[in-house]
Length: 223
Image 1 (cartoon, rainbow, N blue to C red):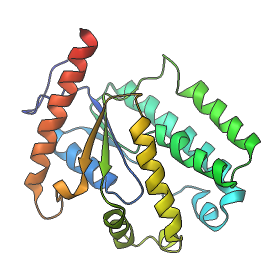
Image 2: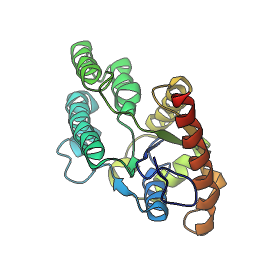
Image 3: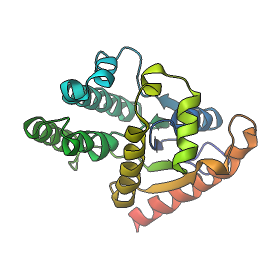
Image 4: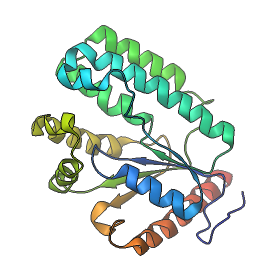
């Protein structure tokens, strides 16, 4: 496909941004979108009927929250590919089952029946040859202290009230998940290697890496 930018990034590319809570996925999504002229696909937090309830009672609402997220992300994924690409996506659909649902099951805040039901639904919807996967998953990574500082700085009360141990476990699970993820190509970026707020030019080397990465991946698929 043709590239419409100097970085050689195909105009129909779908790029997903992944990483633990507070790592800066939304900021990266907007920065890439602005530079490339791509549409954005943002995680919907406002209007979620389960999120506040979930933070107050994990065991009662974990299954409901995960099914809600799965349905919303699946609809959004369908919309992206109906448009024909040219999207930057905030958070991947794969994190739901690989991290969140699995974590609640293993911690006992989602029972086995609910977890198996959720997993079967996810596999039927996503893990099939017919589901269109992104061209690239960008994984934002950094130290736990760096991530925690960013999390605290954005000031969401329900996150501030959540024990630090929860965020530590989530951080560790993200690291385990990405080390075993192979559903689509992955490019890692350390959050200390750029500063989107104080240095707009720091997005340039990231875009160059993305262009090279996608072109190489597509050439390998064709070969």
